[in-house]
Amino acid sequence: MSATGKIGLGGSCHWCTEAIFQSLKGVISVSQGWIRSDEHSAEFSEAVVVEYNPDLIPLETLVEIHLHTHSCTAEHSMRSKYRSAVYTFSEDQAIHARRAVEQCRNDFDNPVITKVIPFYSFRLNSEKYLDYYYNDPEKPFCKTFIDPKLKILLNRFLVHVNDKKIQSADLSGR
Image (cartoon, rainbow, N blue to C red; front, side):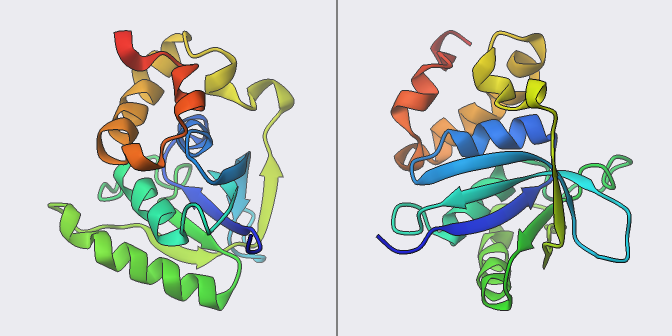
């Protein structure tokens, strides 16, 4: 097994992003909270840090899934809270992430606004909000906002879905 990889992803509510990446084969852990990309800025944005096994799921696939499971082409009033970004831990990783974003551009009708930017720091969310979806997938927020994103995952990226994890959510009746 090669060394694990780590990447930051933001673009929508971190509860949504956490559930998406917890549902994938090859993902070891997902830390949900806020990421800051500049040491000179006090601005944090909702995001997750994903630790993964690149032998099972490559960085490029994680980026592709990220782009398809949030509004990566939409500028809106909440973009500072939900920055559409891939946060990288090295220049080499940034090169691969930029290439992955570029390769996905034709999948969308509008320009992709997702930025590839350096990771600077992370603040973990409160314990009571961690594993938000899988602790209670019946919550109205989960049914309204997270289930549709997980259905995208099932429809477009089924080969990467962790069957045991996703079955615990029972999306069949929704």
